Image (cartoon, rainbow, N blue to C red):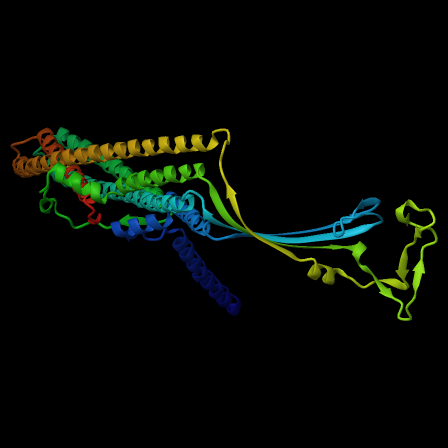
Length: 492
């Protein structure tokens, strides 16, 4: 009986250990992995490598490169081959001897032809230049797509950093209110303060908890938006590195006109518009080439086969001739002088096969082909007119792009200047609020101020810090946008 009891307790202990290990594994499986910290540079690199819009624009570049290679290859000769095989019966034309026969015929034709353009109104030359400019334009479009993505990711990244700082401010405010609440509770318990003071601070602490929850929700939403821009699942852990950048180090030392002049030389959308003007210009020249004659060098190779030619006559080695039974004609219409068909004696054998006929029937051609456009329903002139209109539209698009860039630079400059002024004002406000709150803490601790005055001072300090955080990161981002227009890397 002792052995049974001992074994039972041993099994129970082993079961408890196994169950504890299983619970530990379950808890580890349910615990989400720690969020990996991403720098701004890592976010940008990941977005550029995985963004679908950027990938689609990259395929536009590849497509234009294919068109350019095709334009280059247009200078090479075109070579085509043709092969046919047919079967006919009844009275028909022998494709080899061109004589009428009444029998079954198996025939085949093999041919090859080549054409080399010598002159076509410079269409190929201008088409090559047109596609070269178009490739350059699509490359600049790809650069613009990357720039737009970089700005968007940077904006979302700085928004996450801003919300993280607001969360820290909310935690500080909650900790301060809780500390004052504990002190007030002791004073209320000692009878030095009324119960209403404790209730007021308790409500203040609860309100600060709500503010913290709201800021945490705003932070979670900003992280989700950043994940969506990076195209990673929401379940994947992600955190951002706080950049060590001091706004005092950022100085706007250039005018808006100077920044705009630099932007016109660096921004890809300006270069793309210029390349499209050049591409449309060469498209006009290429279309006008269709109004000129075209000269080509042409060559051909042809051979054929017919089953009617397979039978060949072989004369009798012993000689002799055979005569027809009836005359086929008369000399000088004299019925006494008939003409008979005389043919050597021999046999027909199918020895002239496919390979021999193809080899013997080869004939070649070489020549020049001149095509002169006379009247083609005005299609060529209509094409020229359309390309001229497209060239004018490209010029207008370039002007619109330039105007948009100027407006964006001017707006970004004004925003940066305003953000700098707002940051300086917010900084002075926070310094004043911090000193006022420090004095209020001393007064409240000495009993010369009530809880309502303490709450007002604390809320004013929190709002001042929130405004400072918003102004700081707004100024940082606006200044970086100005640097971006000047071709500087977007780094924090």
